Length: 405
Image (cartoon, rainbow, N blue to C red):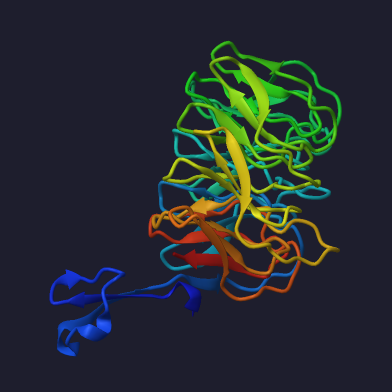
């Protein structure tokens, strides 16, 4: 384990009373002082070193048995991590695909039956992981589209899981009760139509922000229908970072190629841009996180600083220090962030060099841990384990990253 010196905090007791920040330690008798605790963030690289790129791209899922599961990208088997021991192992059949079997943004979804489901990207079928049986299997019909589903799926109130299409022409549903797979909604042309993780609204509908599709996709599970809503944002790569449901019931997506944050109002079934114009392309692609203060935070990709969205005021602003990155490389951060029990948010680096820690209470951000030298290090969303540790599966990195807040 490595401790980050910048986060070490010494707390002192005088008798049984915790000292306040303004109290002068030098004026108090040394016999009355004692160290209460030293708080730190620790980092560890776990498991054997494995070669290759894009090994794991799809976000991890914490299962009821206490383990975390990642579907393979260019790796060919599902990976299981045991947070208690830090050990990892592969399971299930070898997945055949020309490229990445299950994609970066198409994170798995835990169903009420305890199984985990992933939609295919370059694989031919959906993947079902059964944690209790420690097994994985391919289910449903074979799909021949390229780059089928990349946007993270959403569990609806009816128990089904829904995925928006990327290269596929229609939205996908998986019914965990019957292990069946089907399509719904209108046919949509093009590639990279939807890349950002969808969000379940309080009214039971699911919303996906457009990448190249132009308009927001609304799936109504109760009606078994899907429709496009709101204005057309044009082509390009408008939104790629996973959306977040705010306390006001609205959903917010950080911009990639779009110039402004997108706000979706589920009750009005409408969408509109909010906040200032933000320059550049591929600004934010890592999924956002709702903090205890009600604000939403996104780590930068081609943008140089983190983004804070305040739903209460419908405002957005960049904050924190500029994060260096080799200009020849792409995303600083691509893996979705994880909210720790401490209230802080952690993002694993893609082409940045260090972990990004956002402290909403202090309204600050800093880089932590050792410098990592490879590119495309971590692209799969991290997962929080019951022991409070956070795990990120490697993309081009050689090992699993574990953060102990």
